[in-house]
Image (cartoon, rainbow, N blue to C red; front, side):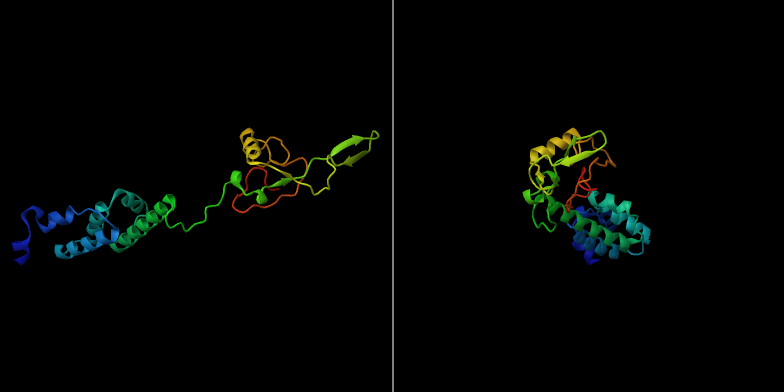
Length: 195
C-alpha cells in the first residue's frame, strides 16, 4: 500500500519497470537493480529471469554473453561481470591508461642490439676441375655479421625475400647456406629468422 502511494504514476507497475529495465551503467549496478525488482516480482522461473537479465544488458556485453550460453541466472550474471571487466581492461590498454601488458616492439622496430645478423656468403674460386677452395668475401673473421637497418628489413619483407640468403621466401623456406640464427623473443617465427 505504501509503495503504491509514494510511487510516481509515470513509473508504471512493478512488471512494467522490471521488463523495461536496461543497463545504463556498470553490470554490477544493473544486477543490483535487477535483483531488487526481481525480489518484488514474486515467483518467476529461472529461465524467464535469465532472459530478462540478458535482454537488459548493453549490446557489447549481451553479444559475447549469448555466445557463452550461460547455464542459469547466477552464471549469466557472473559471466556478464567478467565480460565487462575484460572489455574495460582492453579499452584501458588501447587508450594507454593502466597498461599492464608490455608492448613488445615489432620486427621492424627491434632495438639495434637485437637485430638478426647474417654471415657474409663465401665466394668460391675454382683451382681445378674437381676441387674448390673457400675464401671469405670480406677480410673479417667467419663470425662477422651484417646488421640490417629498419629500411633494409622493411624492403626485404615487401619484396618477399629471405633475410638471410636473399632467396624467395615462403613457408617452409630453407636457405641454401645454413647461417647461425639468433632467437628473438616476441617475434614468433618471422620470415627466415630461424632454421
